Length: 129
Image (cartoon, rainbow, N blue to C red; front, side, top):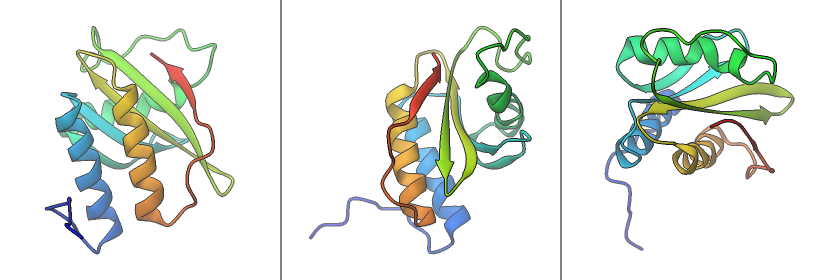
């Protein structure tokens, strides 16, 4: 069996960052992140300031009532956010770029679950497009 992944790591954090970077590059996105409910960045791929801004607003944007302004680093871009439950805890997988990143978010969610040892994803809901 041929191994399709050329860059890998046994360290879960590094493996997650590599997976997010693959999605970012393939989707031609500026950043892809995983954040927790208080906006702290768990892992990201892309320019650090963009990742931090995206992680900070991802939980806020998951609310249907979000009417706030996006940070300058994200303005004018397509921002996609998915809320994912991992054993009762909620994490947010988000992307920002010139085009929609939904396909690449789904790939990132599948990769995140595999890397962190969670079961295959149940139906995830697109929150922002």
